[in-house]
Image (cartoon, rainbow, N blue to C red; front, side, top):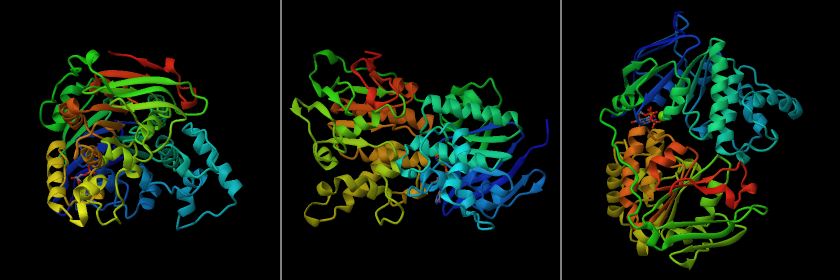
Length: 494
Ligand SMILES: Nc1ncnc2c1ncn2[C@@H]1O[C@H](COP(=O)(O)OP(=O)(O)OP(=O)(O)O)[C@@H](O)[C@H]1O
Ligand SMILES: [Mg+2]
């Protein structure tokens, strides 16, 4: 085997009292895809950020192509051949700039030789980058007009533009549909063939099965196993979380047929030329709406939550017409939505004073929890402590800022928020983004425990997740919302 491109020996990093990395050792060879597998908060993104020059390690050594490697900045890392697609897309793009400028951001921001050319030339330079990842959009549109999945492709295209010797991908498929993920893997196959080393972080076992040459398991900031195919992934998950994986099966409400529907939809049309569809969800039932990214699932969720309006049709909640004018109406009635893009829909930026776990949980319920100007901090803190215990949020306490939590733990805060009060109808849009397999099993158990008191609808692109959580799966199987039809909404399981 050729000598490694990168070797890490005893790399350590702490944030105050939290040890994120404890003497981590790893090496990666040319043309090899190494998958880093680890529970939420295990230290994966911290390691990725050290390799890409975002953080400096506290100790240990890094060697790149036989030479000591100590990147002082992300640009420095890139110049030495390490390109990274980070977990948080929001940190990597500028929403107000055009898609073309976002694709060329590294060249435009290169302080050594900033690139200044007319917009048509920028457009022409960006086009091949977009084509390489199959991004077929108007490049002059603002980046904010793109879906999360398309924004992810922009960050990937930008990383590839620097022709890296080591490409690092931190959860690149979290917001991609199955065909988009497959296109990414085909690209990775090609890069591997060209001798590029690839370090991949993913919670999706399907990703690891498809692409990994080697799976390295991180637990509590150190490597605990290094596995070659064929890999027993059930055993790997148990090694990763350090305990047996909880096993349970969906048990539909006992007499669902005789129960009245809690939530119903009749002749609903979400876009001007879409065809109407119906849906009934019983109290106690968990229904998964599965289908491709861009298929209209989130639009449907937002229509129920009062964030957007359906074009036509009727919704009923407990037999009464359901026509929320805003999310505030929905929250008052116990209809809660955990949105798809956590930083856009649910979490606050660090500049906001209450961007802590406790502040995030209480925000939708302020009118109930803080009546007549009396601030009931005790209630807020109690809810936060319960959420941390019930959802296994890895943190130092209720006052932790959201930006200090790992990606999967941020997602657990979003899910915990909508359990702080009793829901009548709970809507979860892609609830398992970035959540590790062990935590996912625990969250499914929590959702099932609370299921009898409400109706639950989960919107997911991944069928495996849909079957793991739901009593019944219905499928939005057309690529565009405009062509959504009754025949597309096919119950797969009863
Ligand atoms: N900037 C920071 N300040 C304080 N603590 C941090 C910071 N970044 C990470 N941590 C902590 O370090 C630990 C490791 O976090 P990291 O983001 O590396 O986990 P991860 O393995 O990537 O998890 P996930 O699968 O959820 O993305 C966590 O306990 C996290 O809260
Ligand atoms: Mg991470």
